[in-house]
Image (cartoon, rainbow, N blue to C red; front, top):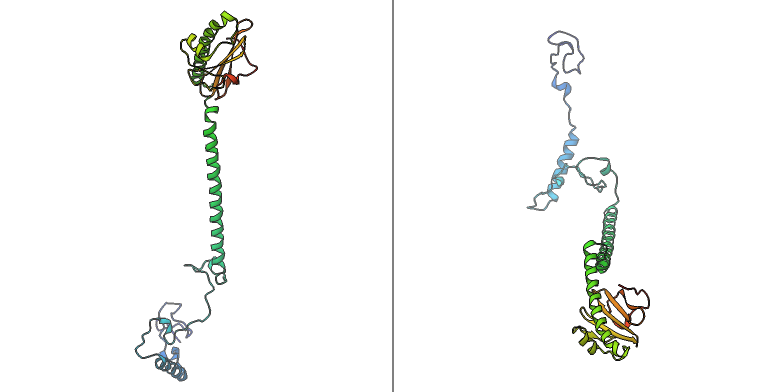
Length: 263
């Protein structure tokens, strides 16, 4: 055929002339596709059978049930997803991946709870231990203020013991012995300082007394809640010696055997 504009010979299957671009007009009969009569009769018979099989008054709610719509009976084996990515185009086993994921999440949750419980128990134990050791570790004499307070308390306890020693020597002088010294007699000679027996725990401001021998008198008084100052008086030999011991039970009967020194 020829192009109606430039008269250029062109094949019949062209839609436009490749020389001038003019549209080519074809006969409709040459391009028309004729549907076989048997195919039309088959579609009409299938549509009629579907209408007769449907119950009266039933309405179609699913467009996929309409005649002529193809529907596959094969199960969906693709993972759900909005876009065709490589991860959701893989086949899956029904129920296996979901159950495995739920099991993994449950195991991780149990492990997390176990770790948190162990950390909480360890933290509580460390806190209790720190609180128990706080007075010993942080209440030591290394701090300047704590050291000054400890020295003042020890000086006060030593002064109280010197007062009791002075009263005891007034009782020792007539007989050259401490054998007759009692807590009440020593209190009367020590400016009414409270005197308790050797096995009695002395509190702040009190003095525990023990007649160790006729020539030795042992006294004790607390400097604070954790320290006790002891005094041992031997008028005829070494004089008065002192020692400080870290203990909460301040009794004259608990005097140490060593560590004594003059002050």
